[in-house]
Image (tube, rainbow, N blue to C red):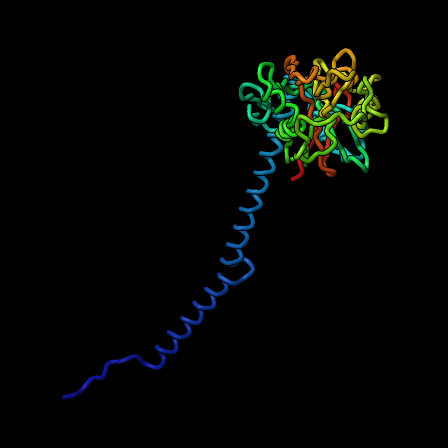
Length: 334
């Protein structure tokens, strides 16, 4: 019986290998050649990205054209880019400043003032402008409210102890009040006009104390007294007002305690104030308590206004020209 063996011949194997090599060559050529699959894929990605970019550019151009049409049709002016400048470099005493501290509610307690009840305030209630008081090396850049920010009762019209309390702590209370108007985005300190220090005054001499004979019967401060410094600065702040910035719409505290002894029978214990139609602090003193022939007399005649002085930071920027129509608008540092 003959046995048959199955298999492929050498010729068939060689032919098969040749065919496979030809197919591999064709495939590699299709994939890797200059016009191959990979190159076409890369080109497709590039074309897609270019198409996206062109589409974004076209949309932006369309938006600009629509904006131009809307502005033209509605007569809406385009706003110029603001040019900020350092306020310290340009501000002159008397220039107007738009200073709007963040809204802050606060209470001055009756235990602080000697008045019969607590008094509530909000910094947002003041809507008027501020003006430059100082801009020099000694004082820094200080602004003061153009008008009184609020009216405050100090002392009592019915109680001897309240009157004494009001006199003894009036400077401290006024400075506490004014520090509530510090906006730390722009400012670094605050005090009441007339106060010698920005720091809160403490340890003031309490009633009664002996009259030391250092004041004449008119109580007008000596021209060298530091008490006059703010007053003279307000008189000299004439960049926008020929008469300076002393006068306000209502009498206000000029934070300085005064003892007036016009004769041997009476002493007056006062807080200096500025009366709107007189403009000098010694003509507007508010007498809290008097000793008349050693008898206590209360002479409180109502509230006075408060004008805070705020020290701004040196590097605050602004726009505007300092006039009332275009006050300096402050830019907080980033």
